[in-house]
Figure 1 (cartoon, rainbow, N blue to C red):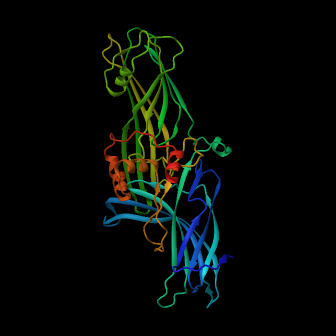
Figure 2: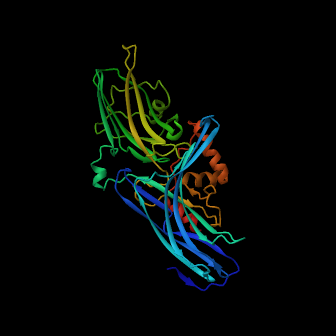
Figure 3: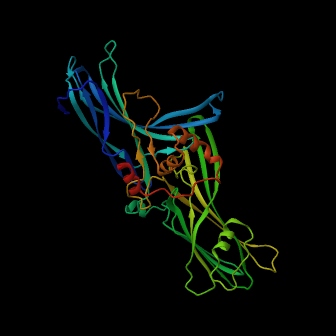
Amino acid sequence: MPVSVPFLSAHRSFTIELAEPVVYLRGLPSNPATHVLRGEAVLVLSKPITATSVTVKVVGKSHTLWPEGIGARGTKMSHEKTIHEQNMILQTFAQGDVIPAGLHRWPFEFLLPNSLVETIEDEMAKVYYYVSATVHRGGMGGVTNLRSRRDILLMRTMNWSDDSTLTSHATPPMSISTERHLDNLDAQICIEKTIVSSGTQLPLSISISPTQKHVHLESINIMLTEQRVYRLPEFGARRSDGYDYKLKMASATDICEVETDPIPPIRLARAITTKNAHISLDNHHFFYRFMFHLPNCVTLNHTSTYHEVDIKHYLRMRIELSQPHQSERTVIHFETPITILDCRLKEDFSALPTYEESLSNPKLEDEEAKPTGFFVCPCYLEYRKKRKCSRQEWMSIRQHSQHENNNFDGIPPPPYERLLSEKQR
């Protein structure tokens, strides 16, 4: 039963209060975990009203755009469907009963399976969730139901503490190492993190030991590829897109234990940005740890687990070396899948995300309206400080920036403590 407290006010409001508007899905969708979404439906009345029931539901929807057209005549440009729904009756009233003036609270609790699709905010497809509460007025003439809605955010992290995750062969490893043994050199590459948030830095190390003289390092090219596949089985529709992002070097550290002549930083930078750095390795055991900037969410999506909005990422590396007596260069290729997390997640995958929730006041609104919640990511906060852009301008930037892949802001998102201190000012 709700707790009713007399409350004198000149207005009427119906809102939803959530203990936490973010749900963290842990590990793979096959992980048999359950998450709890708690909250209260809060009604403030200045005078009594009649009602038949108070209900609440949590809804997940998928919305995709199809500019090429789908359907029998190819005229349908978008499609939306419900992918999850749970309903709950909070209280029922006998005919003629009234809800007295004052403050009324109805607590609720939903159990959300870990198999749910995470929130997706791609330019051509979205998956979003919301909680909707309704005070049903009985359909009397001229009386409308009271409705309130609150968006929620589902973010997927990778958690290795679960036995099911540890034993699953589908779980990406924390790091990947590979070796190449060629006629003129031995090489070792280590990707220290295969799961990383967008807008942060990716560490990797490269070791090259020449077995012949006059070996020169010409170039190191690190490319992040995003592949998107959109599917709509009920219409037999499918579309795929691909985007390449050349990663920019943030730093390079010589970690070789053998004393050798250091390579000037400007020459290392040239190897990353050009094709003909021509760095001699005769007096060097090349063993460097690099940090590369990852694109932020202005241009990069997070990896998804939804078959109908399938977003995957791959890290591609190409190292070219030359020798004077060889007409063709020695090329080392390496490619591996990589998991990109939402930029609102911290690197430890379990701390609070660096986001700020929209400060807009909840309103009585039609439950079929488009989602209005806006969970701000750190990329948006930084951009807004510099450019003073609105939400609509940000979404426009987000939708069109994928076509300008080489122009991304490589600055990592600000720390959570900084955003929190700014909010408290």
